Image (cartoon, rainbow, N blue to C red; front, top):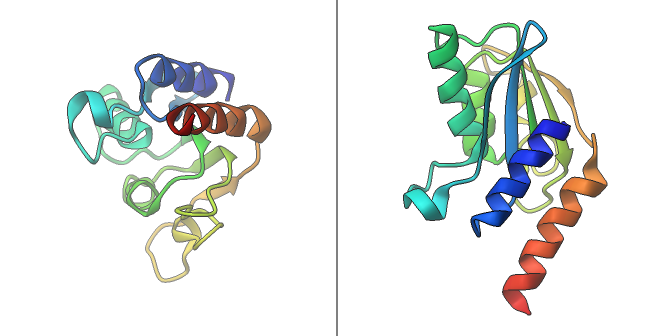
Length: 143
């Protein structure tokens, strides 16, 4: 999760919403990234999506079985859906997202019983540090 926080700080340095993610397979970081929506002008350029793409390229397979995805903010519905479709084994996130969280806050897509894959889930890891980055970013926008 520390590596995901480092990625979130990179996003912050670019003026992006500070969300970072890393993918780990067999104990090694195989992909890392952060939000790039503003820089790329791409509504899908969330940290999770970018990292899932990198991980699939690195493994040579869209099925990310055995991969743990660490992300600093609870994934939105788009990202949660991508995590399920990619067959990610485990999702670990930092801060909950009461407005858009799809891994337990608003809904739980990653463990929905009607979908063909369910992801092992752990939330709240380094939540305070993750939330502090987000609060600081949004305070700066309003201030």
